[in-house]
Length: 213
Image 1 (cartoon, rainbow, N blue to C red):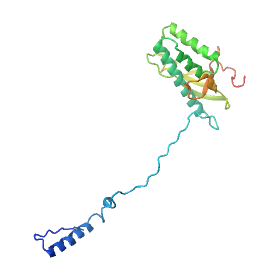
Image 2 (image 1 turned 90 degrees about the vertical axis):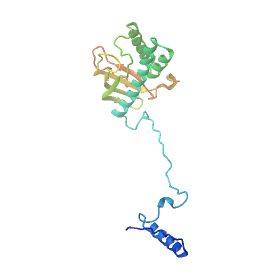
Image 3 (image 1 turned 60 degrees about the vertical axis):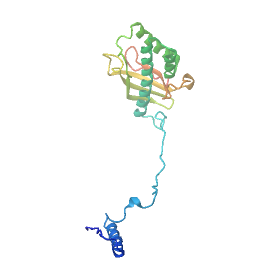
Image 4 (image 1 turned 45 degrees about the vertical axis):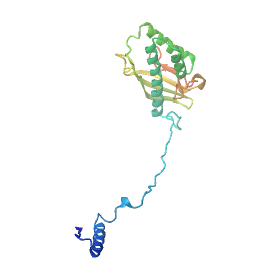
């Protein structure tokens, strides 16, 4: 429908009435009716309140599966990566590095082995390390023992982000136990799991199961 607005040259009483009629007709010809944007001075739109959820990715699920253990191992690899970068930056093992490692290992024997390894690397001036190392990547290849307090798995470890010419498929075994929170007063370890064992035997064979020994 085409609408034409008439403009009267003289504003007589009759022409004024006609002008009102023409304006009303013009409004009726607009796209489908009145302009909804002008209905009401302050239109109100109902909105739902925003919802927020906080999920702990390390909360122990009803069934501990490969995906969950890989997620925990990635968190521990990142925590150990922070230790490595701190030690390389300071060229020593500062108290913070010690505290961070204590939160990663569930016993002082494993902690001391980690410290000894770093001290050996320091004596060799960190030969083979990348200038700004990333995190090693640990991936589960088999779940061997799975309980809520202890998990024993076979893994591959990729060190290519940490060292130059490093192995990208090194088979190892890892045991994880629930972290004793007294070992982590600063809250460094977000996973709430700690290494009870990591590595392999002299023959590169599977070690005895730490979860049952």
